[in-house]
Length: 113
Length: 114
Image (cartoon, rainbow over all chains, first blue to last red; front, side):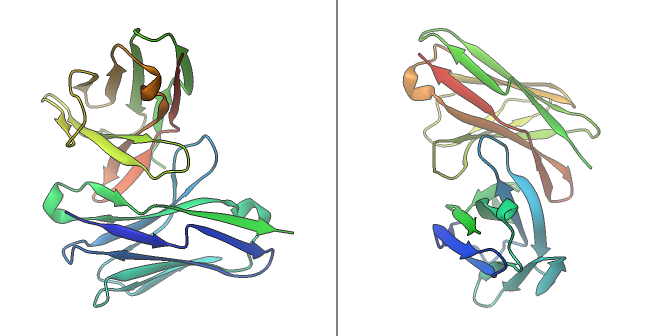
């Protein structure tokens, strides 16, 4: 099945700086890669996603890039703000497993003042 | 946007009792619901997939007799933790695909078994 690795596990940046989180996946059949933000005690919230026919997608301060050849995708947050502090999960869907999302291990982002 | 309403948000129960968690899709039909468990500082682990009108599919290592899943309608799926024990204490989250490959998550249920 699909295996998703995520790095780093923790990330601390100063307010205004950029944050980058990277994920790799194993199943070349995966074609949908969402990113979720999870605040303490809450369910994950979709913040951006990318499909395999696109190399990059941007939504205001958030962008995601996908390299299908290398099987990795990254989340970029620019001009970070304290409210960006949360745990971020990448995920991938392996079409060979009935559309089950496989999650990365998560990155705890801390934006300091 | 699509909303999955999950209740209760937290529950404390005595060891040996059963707890039911409900997830409702509010503005779309959820023929499939995924149930996850998340331990502190860990990722979401898929427990089972429920399909409306048919038996749920459980992941390897998940006891189907302990975690009863019912998906009786296109908008409601329930997870019942039977004979709960302290090791079942966790954060349980449901998720449903709201269109082709976009997934909406519930707000989660914090279960504490004492």
